[in-house]
Length: 120
Image 1 (cartoon, rainbow, N blue to C red):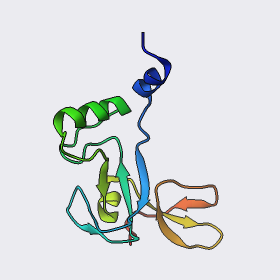
Image 2: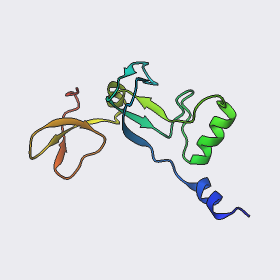
Image 3: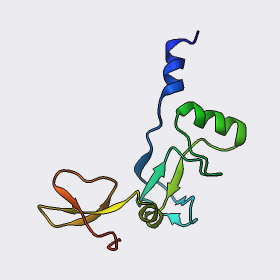
Image 4: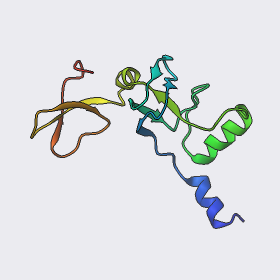
């Protein structure tokens, strides 16, 4: 019988896409472009950056890295802004009150989705 914390870790689902801010120079795992300091990028915690395998749970991620990539640091796949738009992780959003247009992962109450052909 598993103890309760281990059982919770076994079934804990990964969060998916996160919008992050680079704190140093980072490389996009898809195109190799440098993501500069303070540039926004997306990270898919469900995808292996090395071989592209997709995970559903934390335990699948941990097992994959310990068996397939033991020398690598455990992390998700990083996407630069352009690759984030290509994959659909980022969309252009307009603030209804200010008419400001900016990239975002999701649409909030006072925002609306705008044409994707407009990208930074």
